[in-house]
Length: 507
Ligand code: AMP
Ligand code: MG
Image (cartoon, rainbow, N blue to C red; front, side, top):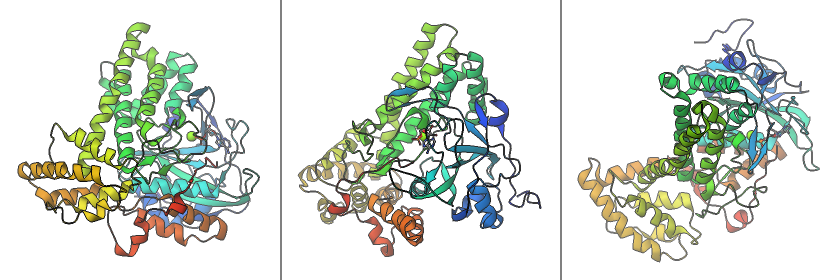
């Protein structure tokens, strides 16, 4: 149901709790006017989920609203304040320097969702920046977020991408400007807590924590120590999230504390990318020179970021410092085990293991170890393994073996896996067919491979040709369903395409 009317043809029904609850921690602001807004991409399905009238928005009205030229009825646009550790160094004031929260909608499932613009002009938090966004990174965030959603990974989503009709200045070039409309469970970050905590006013910090509990963890309101429970809940969501990233080879690229949402959604897609060859040291971001945010380091960084959240929450955990630190430390120290639990669950799914056996963690890590230094495509290896689940004889192993330079470690491992699958088949209800089906649902055929993403973005930006982008988006929306017509999308990059691949913040 929408509440469409002549004043509100798209049916926006805002209920802006952040603006109401947290006055003083944001700047009410308006988006910059842009000269010639053009709606490039519009997520009709998501609009409908949000209770909006997709038909009304799929044209000039959408272009006006999603460029920031026209605030939708009931919006209270604001720039949120936050702080954050960037590459380990603390910045006391970051905040929305090029983004605006328009407000919150209650979606068709009763979930509260933020609607925000990114690239909508300067704000009081812009520091030296222009507040704008270039088209390529806007489309990149659109594609990546939608791909992650289709992979079943909690993420912010893209509602619209609008070209502004002006250019932005970036590294001596002048690419077209764009605005992304992003939908999130909330935009509250670890860095939001750091900003409130740094003010030293426990009452303000409590206001934020109560807001987050009401929004994301209402069941904790009656908990004996709700703020400790909140820290545990955020840690739990991050453990689950990062385990899912690791399971698909996703590298966020900038896991600064201001880019970690307390909702447990993936947020702020910048120089992110998917790993092709399995290698824990994989880094694509040009600014991550020390590999702080390398693929294999992500669980450690999640813990590090949660420790910063815990520090911020200390005054709420206990009235005295020492017991507060003890409570926080316990949660942080428990994080690796939480993460391992989720990661093992992911690996069991990916390996088709039914039930639980004591050696499962070793079996999983030995499969990963078999790929190191072998130039094995991570995504293809798991998918191909799945096809062997119904082949106890090993007669069809050649396809998987061919991915390896030297398959001897794989050859030693496969019998162990087959023995384990047979165990599951005996005790479980599903048997080998069940493992195959489960593995096809756990191991994607299609991921946003770097060369495909780059080709789609350059066609859009350089030739105004959105066909490759839209085709890729369609493929990525069905990542588990192999289609012979899309065989090329499952192929790894050639050595030439993969050589020295770098991603940029490109904001
Ligand atoms: P990000 O790297 O996107 O996570 O952004 C880090 C911080 O820099 C945030 O406070 C952003 O709002 C700010 N920022 C990034 N790009 C711009 C820009 N073009 N103009 C103003 N602020 C920006
Ligand atoms: Mg950010």
